[in-house]
Length: 421
Image (cartoon, rainbow, N blue to C red; front, top):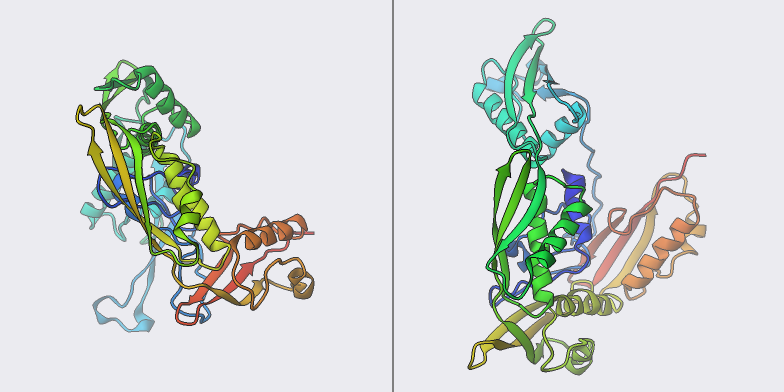
């Protein structure tokens, strides 16, 4: 489900702090990295502009996955056999009983989930059983809660065999209702609307555990954006009623928090006063967790990236104090900033066949020897796309960044593919 996972990551455009512990971090927003739906444990990462490479040496592109149905397995010198004695065996995988799923899509998901398939299904029964269980789990994730999978082995030609997965998808019950238990401040209707909006965005009118886990993350952030920084919506229970399901979520709202002191440490490129002025929350305001997160992990990250600090990170330590009556609290924050080195562009160039490099360089707004500027880099990518000469260039996926941390240098290679005539 890599496309779905990337979509989940892309929709999380506002990264929100997790306030369940003292040390608070944020997710990495680079779409070039494979991302799973967010959980609170995963929110402690620290952002960097790009994934770092150890040196400026050339890297070899990696080939893509094979999408054919026939899965080839090479026997790698089993039992000490010499290279000349190695043979390649073929296993064909087929499915029976699929209703609204394509075999190619299911095979692709098996590869993406690193599901092992046997070389000889008649001898490796345990591997076949594990693969069948994985297929069942994939079907459950698509809403087929009572799917079943069995197998058989067909002889094809010679030593070639076909492993056939016999699938009974069963019914896919729709979500009839979202319920919430323990909420007093937030109405069940309000929370249900947020949950439905999230599930609908991913075209899920059925229960997909993976997507709903992400939607719970968004529900928690919704509550924290209203000042309930320690709110927790958790432990969903799924109840089937006929052809529908009802999802009930436990709610711990906590108390409303107002902003106390914000202490900034580690900043030298910009003064703490300037950094604090970029946060549009004043002492005594209800703490908007989304706004606080945007300040730290979008606004400040952009400021630093525009000035060459591509490895800016920030960590937050909150301190919660309740009022005497316990109805409200004060949240103070210590912000520890690690600016990292300021990077200069060693070389910026292009990868591709028969490129008019001189003309392309004239479109760039940053050049060799300049202090790196993320905004100008993104505008340069836009100008290249505006020519219409190339397939759409993705600023993250199609740009290879290699850094030399000791000397503060960055080497950038933009991959271009010409549009067919």
